[in-house]
Length: 235
Image (cartoon, rainbow, N blue to C red; front, side, top):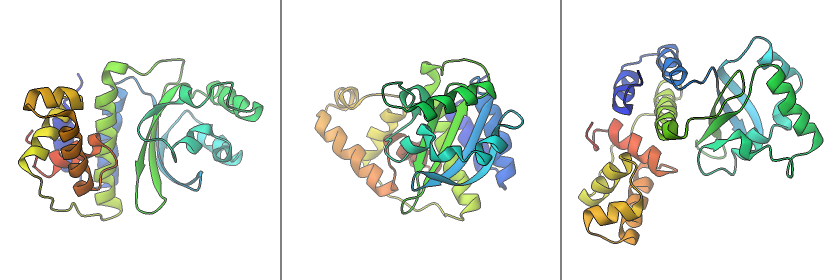
């Protein structure tokens, strides 16, 4: 049974090591059907480190030996992506070359099929990413995409606390900013939030944008997770 994002945040907040955190994260992703997972750090369109991965035997060794990150469209796309994306968005035959097409074919033969990637931006030009995929042909569940996204963001934020020693900042939001984020958490659009709160869509965008800036979040989902972690948004 899939836990709520609040449950997942509560459990991961209790983790005292990177391994404990990973042991909480992987089962949560497995419940969504993903058998492969990797957490990597990228810079200048190449992978600079892979803290951990769960792949079929031999896949990662082959990936490294062949230096596939130099041609991997997924790695290249994380630097311009504004949010999670499906791998299918990067392997359109009209935009990839023959070498990249063969790369995707080789991945499938090694048990790494279609999946999704969640990019997360660190300081400078660093970009962390979590990629989740299937060992046989499959399709990411659209109705679970928001949950998967929030789980990955929470994993990353907690990982940064443990590995990079980034301490959570004390943030103060206005009542309007909190209300807007609370409804973002429920999956409401800016227009829907405006209707609920009796304010214009532009005003909602203003409050959500301000909250994102205060948290240093690249998107509203990250701001929501940071709000929950800090206790500003109630569970």
